[in-house]
Image 1 (cartoon, one colour):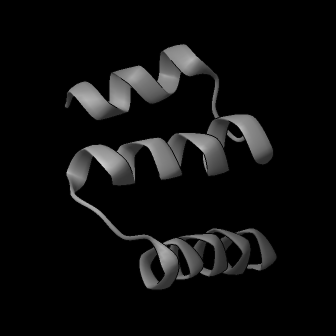
Image 2 (image 1 turned 180 degrees about the horizontal axis):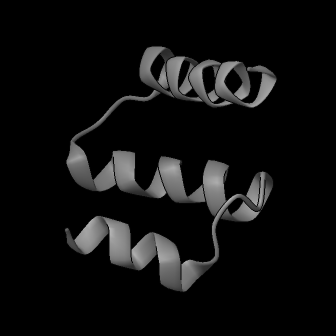
Length: 51
């Protein structure tokens, strides 16, 4: 349950503070999920984005 709340909190914070179009958001998401939190590696993130 705590991991769900952690993901929800990160996504909510990004949703409330991010600005710009879709390209900008992809950069914000990558910085948060790949670089900062290390939840995904670059290859996994790229695979999700291409869906």
